Length: 372
Image 1: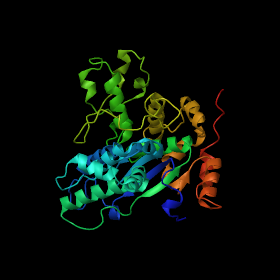
Image 2: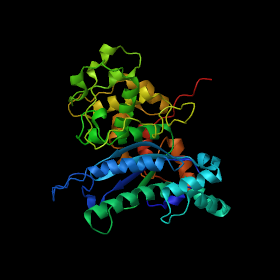
Image 3: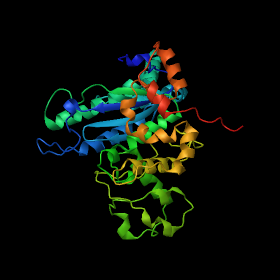
Image 4: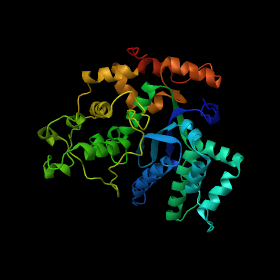
């Protein structure tokens, strides 16, 4: 079913969305082109840097991302509440950081000119929490840089972007794991920490930098790509040093090694920032790691019973989890979530039927009530 994005992504309303953009003609314009033999992998780093830059300007949280050779995924949460709390001066400053003036006009003069127009500030405030403006500034920038590099004109991306509404915690967690396991599912990485240009790798590196004590891991295990490397011993900060030996941090293949994931939306809420899921970062790492092991062809496809409590807390059915995170993109169209969430969404957009109802019934169930 085709529906204008404005029908279900509305400016000024908070929401979580899975956005997906593919290169024109499904070409490997962000990887190694099998026809010409040219390698465009450096563009993956460009996409991640641009995501980080935009996250510092927009009132939008980047919850997860993965960049592949021919497409990329990002899961974004709109935060109009943050934009509404900004002063007019901050709105003007952020906008001018996004669109700096080419003429040599002092910054304070530019800011004052914007502040003097309340109508203009109101428009810019809405834009700085808009999904379309965020994705437009991301995709347009990448397309311009790539086309200039190739000395060509025309489309770089096949469409503006595809968007799914993630209506509750169950859908958000499943979609984030789906994105973070992209490389493992494609057979391009053996473990989450070896999945280059993904949010899970960035989170793991940042966690390791903060929590691993220097000299507790043998030097020869830090820069090896073990086919069965495990992150599980890393999940509990109270683990002894000798139990960390089985964890390997692979050398990044990208041209930069960002070991700070502060620009990403935290998994769990902190005193300073709202998190995206009702679980700890360790729980999420374990969820991704064990889900990845199930998806790998060299591992038995059994669901680990330790995952059941985590999944039940967010409203996901453990027996359907593997299928959910393997085929999330094809199971749902406009939105994903619990049956009750989909019904509310259908009423909101004026539809009587949505693709994904059957998948939602199989994948999700209402989470147990929270203890008072």
